[in-house]
Image 1 (tube, rainbow, N blue to C red):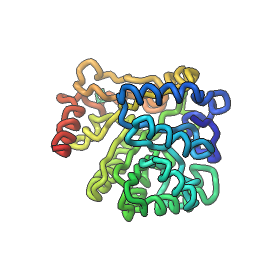
Image 2: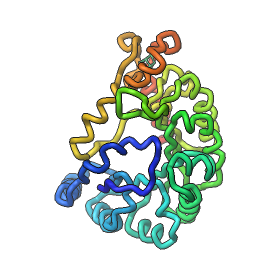
Image 3: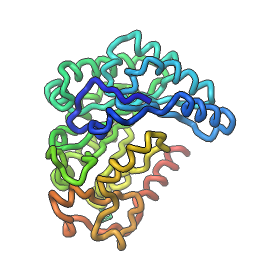
Image 4: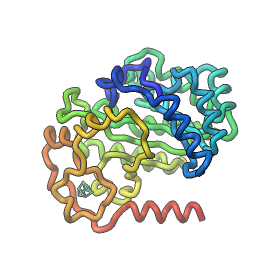
Length: 301
Ligand code: SF4
């Protein structure tokens, strides 16, 4: 719903297309709300963009979504705008109850270097602390895993350990949106693995749910079920999709013999940089998705 942004993250997935992608129209937005008001087919709505908090209509959109029967309204944000108490108050009162915030590093030096803007970390952290005081709010975080961040993942978990409303931590392994890794941000999975395991285990020990995207589950052993590549139904300018598909998906020499149905395999850029990793990857004998679903079922019961 908003394709402007005031950060310059090195790993941005839409930096090359932000200027030409068009936000969903108000008419399309209203159509979705009207459909849900009739059918109640969706439980939650996620408003995102580049940076959704730059859209002055965000509170009105959230209110309209709640009126249309969405029980949860989430924003995906870099969190800088949340450092103003009045902004947080307005968003919470408008019905935004889930905040999915990008945390790219464990401290100002690392986060600001990746996001390209001084004080981005301090403002984001202040916003998280303000949110943490609100009853009914759920905080989720995402840390994009690149060559610039992979060895600091556990520190990110530690830095956020005081947040009471942080329910879920996600780790999305970087996709370059191109056939080559021009910015040298694609990290080798086996280099990432020990850091990802420690971060995921530490987050779980703090009571957080953990989701990992775009990482081979066969490398994760007993944590394979944390890989979840499904995404919500996405309404976006169709010009996004050809760029997205340049990543190349489901490439793996073991694909035909592997039981993992929710694995994205290796990207074209990854294969170009590190090869097929045939000896390191190994076909799975069970589908980790089933184990994850079973774990969720136990939690729900
Ligand atoms: S063997 Fe290949 S398809 Fe199977 S989980 Fe590993 S990377 Fe994915």
